[in-house]
Each structure stands twice: as structure tokens, then as C-alpha cells.
Length: 313
Ligand code: MEV
Image (cartoon, rainbow, N blue to C red; front, top):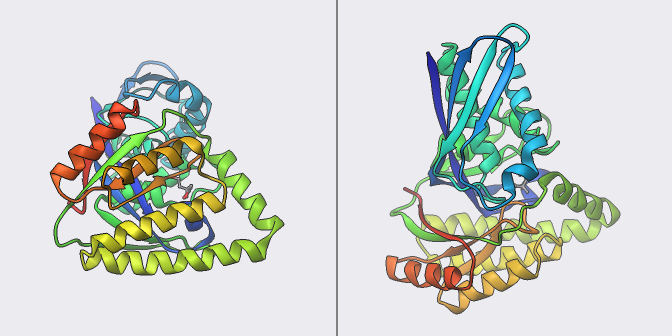
């Protein structure tokens, strides 16, 4: 017997970090996914085979966090490893890197595989809750946006409920899919550390932070409308603005700034870091497959691993 599951990778179009404080953000699942196979075996505990492709060093850096995450998911799903043993094998085509929701995708795939192996009958909402517990292994205060995009797929408008009630999750439909390029800085960031630093800055200077959030609220409001109206020039402009705000809260770095500039210089309508920052990935809005190829090649030729994807599929 074996249970199987998968979870999409994701990219945040607007609102990483700000989303932690209860303001809206917009994320999109990407086509690449992490898969998981769970097999019941003799004994106690679990054996882990992690066959996911990665940017060098990612899996080693995240190993301890991954262990906590797996334990959290198993505990939440009522699996007691003092009574049984599992072989857990991760795979799939999502290249693990900071910024693509690799941790969330693995949590979702694991929860789905456990659900199947033990015939628990959990629906997507409960799978999402289990994956959220797993995400806490990677950082103490996840907003939940990554696991939500990873579980449900598509384009998700998300607001974390800071009171602990249900989060706002709305599906956003596009008139047609839009080409996007994702590129990796090759640097793996620690989400807990970066989120913690931002929180410290916010606490040290709440008025300044409120001012940045106020500017961001305009970005997300207009960004959603512009996407729904397919006003992609505006979307691109707002992505650039979002990147600037992320620079202000100190989560960008020289490499990410160079990469977004390179993407823009090659015709991208907008570009920003995506996810945790201080490493990880950037995204570039490149409507049309010609433009997508051009920006993809420019980033790849400059030595950054890059991927082509579509949002709003
Ligand atoms: C990480 O992909 C996104 C952050 O906003 C953290 C979170 O939302 O939990 C940085």
C-alpha cells in the first residue's frame, strides 16, 4: 500500500511580508509541483527519501526545519510513529529554492499522501490546515498564503485573520493566462529570520512601518483591479512599486535588485522579488511568449537559473 499526494509551487505577485500583518496579498500557484509517496513499513519512526530537485544547498539548509515540519503534519493528522513506521519519499518537478513555496508544497503533498494512505477522507480545507501546521516548522508565524496557494491552485487573494478565525481566500479569475518568468538568485534565505527582522523593524518604528503598509494597500487594491482588467502595463508598474516597498523594509539585496533591473531592461513589464527575499527568487511579468523567452534567456545567460510559467491558468 502507498498513499500519494502533490502540492503546487507558488509565487507571490503582491504582498509578501505585509500579508503577515493582516493586509491582503495575491499569490498564484505555478505548474510545477512537489509529490509525496507515503508507504507503511515495519517498525517505528520514518525514513525520508528527498528526491526533489534543488538549488545547491537548499535541502541541507532546510533539513532541521523539514523534520519539525513533518512531525507537525503527522501530529496534526493523528499519526503516531511510536506505533507505526513510514517511508516518506518526496519528488516532483518543483525545483526547491526560497521563494517558490517549496516548503508549503512539500507539506501539502505530505498531508495528501497521509490522507490517502490512511483513508482519512480529509477535504482540501483540512489538508490546507495540516499543511499550515507543517509550515510552522519552517517559521513560527506563517501567514498561510503559501500553503493556501499550494493546496487550491490558481490565483488566490488572501487575507490572514489575525484574530485566529478563518482567513479570507478568494479565487481571482483572469481573462487569459499571463506569461511569467521566475529566476533564482541561488541564495537560500531563512524565512523565520527575515520575517523576524521585519517584525523588529516594525516594532522599533511603527509609524514608519504603517506608512509603508499604507502605500502597499494602494498597490494591492489597484493591482488586483488591473489584473482583472488585463491592464498589464499597470500591473507591471505596481510590481515595480511593490519591489521598492520591499527594499524599504530591507528584504531585498544587491543580487535581487540586479536581477529585477536586468528583467526590466530586457522588456519585462514589471519585476520584483517574490517570497521571503534576501535571496530566493524574482518574478518578471512578460506577457507574450516572445517577451517571456527574451527575459528568460537574459536571466539564464547572466547565470541565474530561470523558469517560464503561466499564471491564471
Ligand atoms: C513567504 O513565502 C511569504 C512571507 O510573507 C511569509 C508568510 O507569508 O508566511 C515572507
